[in-house]
Length: 232
Image (tube, rainbow, N blue to C red; front, top):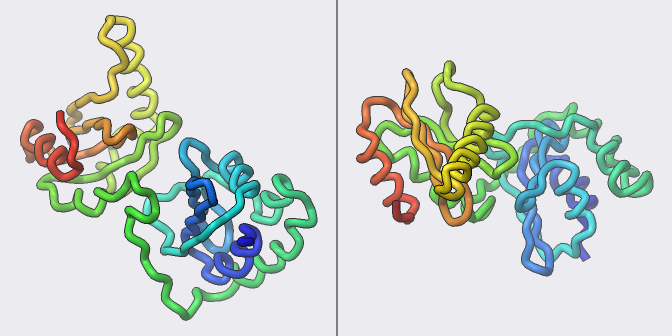
C-alpha cells in the first residue's frame, strides 16, 4: 500500500520544489505543494491546508505523480513539515521528517530534471489555462473557489485590488442578486482605470480574468468563452 508520509520523505523532499498529486481508490485526488523542502499548501476539492492534508492521511492511495511547483501557489502553511505531520498523524508518523527536511533544505536542487505535468493532470479544472495567453489583451487569471482567490497564471497590474477584495466583491454581488430576486449572480464584469475584469462560471467552478483596456469587452468575452468551451 502506498504511504503518503513515505512518499513525502523519499520522493518530495529530495526534490525540494515540486507538486505531489495523489489519487485514492475511491476516485478522489489531492495536491501537495513543496518549496525548499517544506510543505506550503495542500488542496483537495474545497478543502485546503491542514484540513485537506488530514483527509489525505486517511486515504488508501492508489497512485501518485510528481511535477514542477506551479506558478502562483501562495503559502498558507507556515509550520515546519514535521510539526504539521505530528499534529495530524502523531509523533511516530513524523519520525525522520525533521532530519529529512534539514538535509534537503540545505542542499542544492536535485540533479535529475522533474517532469512538468500538464495543468489538466494537476487539476482537471485547469486544462484551459495554458491557452489563455493566446487571447489578445489577456493579463491574468485567478481561481475563485468560494473561500479564497488564487492566481493561476499571469499577473494583474500592481495597482489592482487584492484577491481578497475580489472574493468579497463576488459575495456582495451574489447577495445583491438574491435581495433583488434575481437569484445567485455567479458572473460579473467591471472596468477599472487599469484593466477590465470578469468573473466567469466554468464547469461548476469560477475564474476571475483580467484583460487590458485595449480590447473590446464583448470581443474578449466571446474569445474567452470559445477557448474554454462555455456559452454565455
